[in-house]
Amino acid sequence: MSQPLSHPALSAADPELAALVGAEEQLQADTLRLIPSENYVSAAVLEATGTVLQNKYSEGYAGRRYYEGQQNIDQVETLAVERAKAVFGVEHANVQPYSGSPANLAAYLAFAEPGDTVLGMALPMGGHLTHGWGVSATGTWFRGVQYGVRPDSALIDFDEVRDLARKERPKIIFCGGTAVPRTIDFAAFGEIAREVDAVLVADIAHIAGLIAGGAHPSPVPHADVISTTTHKTLRGPRGAMLMSRASHAKAVDKAVFPGLQGGPHNHTTAAIAVALREAAAPSFRDYAHAVVANAKALAEALLARGYDLVSGGTDNHLVLIDLTSKDVSGKVAAKALDRAGIVVNYNTVPFDPRKPFDPSGIRIGTPSLTSRGLGTDRMPLVAEWIDRSVQAAAKGDEDALTVIRGEVAELMAAYPAPGLPTA
Ligand SMILES: *Cc1c(COP(=O)(O)O)cnc(C)c1O
Image 1 (tube, rainbow, N blue to C red):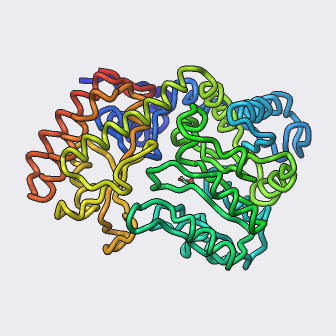
Image 2: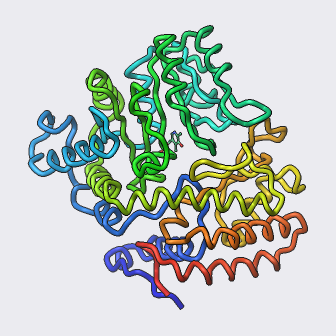
Image 3: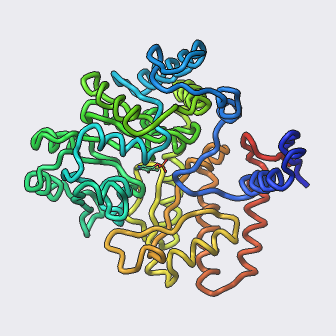
């Protein structure tokens, strides 16, 4: 039996809630978490989020606050800002956005008026809701025009992007996405944005850690604004940052506060600073490259087992599996994998004939398993578990899923992570 973590005050004050936290700790310990936007933060990041910095109100920016008592908070935020500038090589950083979606909304507020045209990647092609997709505020308050990928290669069609940009004259062009397994060509986007005088926002939410660790090219020379979450491959707390050239600093800062937000979440800011210090260490480069090496090894092992991968493989942390040839839908497969202790999400594939609530694909990624220390030698086994689970899903073989769940838990017990109960 594994040792539960102790949260003495929480357990005494609210046993019901404490039990749920304990159950989640056990779930994260026992399962193979393959959702590409998730991770395990370090013990230091976890501690920083649980500090008394949580108790403060600090509207404004360091040295320009609307509240007194900011002697320490100003230094915390300045540390986070300076570390972000150093890690990403940018002139300006704002570390206050509450999460990725509000950070992107701040970019709209800074550089467009309601009703203006924005150009982004379509959600079913791998883009994010906030890049002007219809059900998002960004697609109703702004006129979202969407580009996709080529049907033959599943790669971004830059002829289409250029044609749309010339015809529609967007105020903002978004690049980056949530289900893009290939390198983003920031230079190509930058050239198109300059030609049509649009602001290029590089949304690096998924790949920020890979960029920080030198495992993906940087958007810095090409993008006017860089938007990122801090909790995906960057392995920080749930939060976000907007980075830019100095010339856009005022517009960005004004959009975040007072444009969209009130007080910053100082405990999150502190944890972002800690994560950025970790991201500047040589070991983070190893981590970022290991994430990509694991994803490539996993893709190879899946291809060898006859799986169709969108774009044929991966350059980054993410693999998009098209299950059409396996006679099982993405949702049925994802739910079966969950019962086998392998956590993924179902996802549309480009040109998906199925509906988004039961699409043809599943999306997997390697940030979490890499943080737990699994290496490329383990990826054939991960592919085998996925394959056996998908086959069990097709046959409705619950017993096979239970067996896999046991095998997964046994292996994962050998790979501890901060915040998890230990065997
Ligand atoms: C995750 C993500 C976001 C949104 O982040 P939230 O913190 O979930 O609001 C924005 N853009 C991209 C590309 C993402 O992957």
